[in-house]
Amino acid sequence: MRVDVLTIFPDYFAPLELSLIGKARTTGLLDVGVHDLRTWTHDVHRTVDDTPYGGGPGMVMRPEPWGAAFDALTPVPPDDLDLAPVLVVPTPAGQRFDQAMAHSFAGEQRLIFACGRYEGIDQRVLEEAATRMRVREVSLGDYVLFGGEVAVLVMLEAVVRLLPGVIGNADSLTEESHANGLLEAPLYTKPAVWRGREVPEVLRSGDHGKIAKWRRAQSLLRTAAQRPDMLASAAPETLDKHDVAT
Ligand SMILES: N#Cc1c(-c2ccc3ccn(Cc4ccc(CN5CCCC5)cc4)c3c2)n[nH]c1N
Image 1 (cartoon, rainbow, N blue to C red):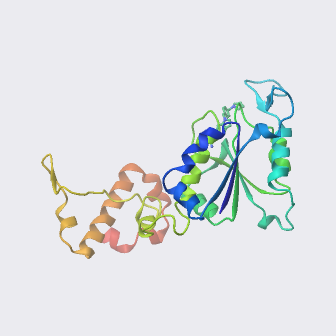
Image 2 (spheres, protein in one colour):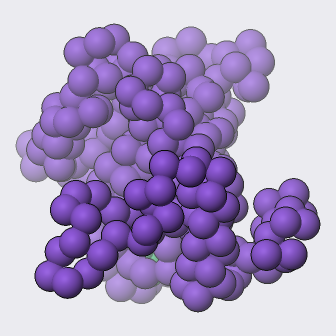
Image 3 (cartoon, helix red, strand yellow):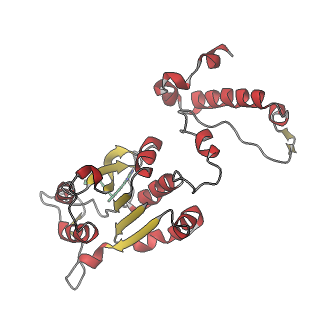
């Protein structure tokens, strides 16, 4: 997978050298380019923002640098938009990012992330970009950040860990929260007793059938307690008849 990130704060992406994303880059599973948007400015102050038409708070990112950056990153217009890169634009006004969207992005050959700042990006940038890329306006959640960089780091981590070969044990991808529509069961490790608190006996029984059943029940209980909304929207096959019977 090829990922390009456009930002006025390229240093935000130094963490991409670390941990599993860093390993994915060194093993060739992931190729990342971080680009300073000011590269595509030409005035002495390298200006990327201006006041909003119609008034309103703050500043808006000017279209020209974005247009020139996209020209450089996507020089050849696609024959078929379905084969074009996905342009991910973090914004409070976007579709909520979730595990399903992470899986969708993980299936792409190329992702381009546009990190806005100030109050956002001139709308014409997204309109013009949609002629040569599949534009996805995405929000992390119902709160307001200073810009798109942190959102891109979160989305990149969620996507890259789904790439084949990035996580050693692929089983962990199937058992984790949101992978099967439920929250994961509680986790325990050594010591068996810690400050008077014992690990549930079933987990030390060696009976894998009982352990799986216990974990399933704990997942349902945890989801009902922490995220009843997930249970309400869970696909029927997520809640099989055994769950109700036990
Ligand atoms: N993903 C994600 C995000 C973001 C996010 C993502 C990208 C940018 C670019 C700039 N900002 C800052 C900003 C944006 C809008 C407002 C609202 N204003 C009211 C009048 C005109 C706009 C204020 C601050 C961003 C925030 N915030 N929360 C998420 N889940």
